[in-house]
Image 1 (cartoon, rainbow, N blue to C red):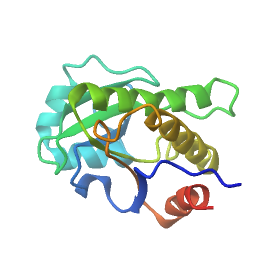
Image 2: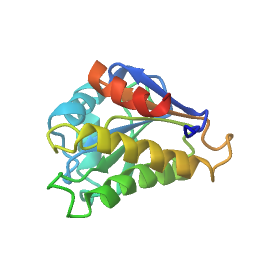
Image 3: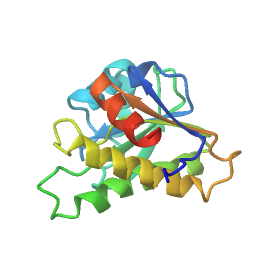
Length: 175
């Protein structure tokens, strides 16, 4: 029998910098000072205040998360998390990736964000295999949502930049 995921979980294909939601997650590097992919897009869209604020945070460890204002983004907050670089699976990558999703939800609760949008953390230049990363993301978030009342977290959106990523999420969520 197929697993039924929490009804608060949805997927959407598009640009995470355009979504109107309480918090978007930035798949950042450990400096939090911008980079490529989602990280670069979020920094460009948020404006220079995001970089200035991130400079005060002292970086971020892999698997952890820190929040800032969203500045020029339509979201209220950016939750920065550092996913693992995939090295074949033997370096606790799965645990570190799950920790990213867990810490982001914890930070969302701390800052009062009721809705949160995630990118596909670590699946770009960090090389995490998309099917494995997708399973970890959905399983982790679903498990945590089971412990959080709907009024605390009302919506979790997995924002997929391309169709291949959207298909990976839909294959697990709806089949």
